Image 1 (cartoon, each protein chain N blue to C red):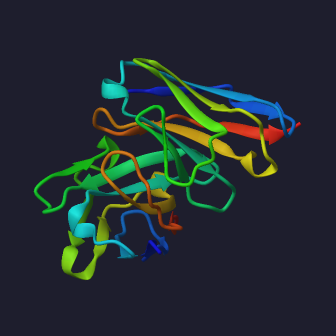
Image 2 (image 1 turned 90 degrees about the vertical axis):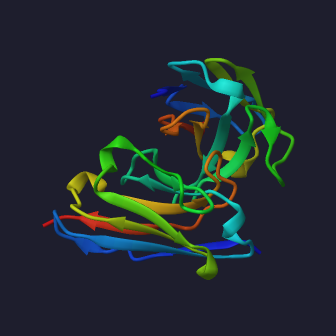
Length: 108
Length: 116
């Protein structure tokens, strides 16, 4: 099983700042089969990125994904008020599919 | 507009059973893998199971193998999760999601509480 470790657990930033979220895998994620999701309280997750770097339909270009192998990054170039949420990475290169523990981006 | 609507969540005693349903509109599920993902209260996301288009492939997280069964009815555009021998650690919101790899569409979830 591929274990995904996200860091930091909480990121305290101000609107307009850049957010850099990390997702590290215990084994190499095949074919960069890694996705990122955003979840706000009381809501379902929302797909942001798949294939490590491809933005999902309707996702603003301030969100970008990068990485390969065991190290992946989600970057939010300039935080908007609606971006404060919890972010999860997920690998789908092997079964069982696994999610990271999440990074909470909170307003400083 | 794509909608996934889960139902069937309830309060159930340990050892009990529940059947969750997910009714889909806005796309035809017969062309897609489908999945269930759960979230314990205040915790992160956990993939539970997925199923291919003709039910010939089904996969489960180890913790539910032998207790949960995923199924689908393409004619009804619906996905199901039969949950038996429920445990306290199965408590959480259960989401229906499109796809067997990443998940583009999600339902709003249905709450399952296992408690005496």
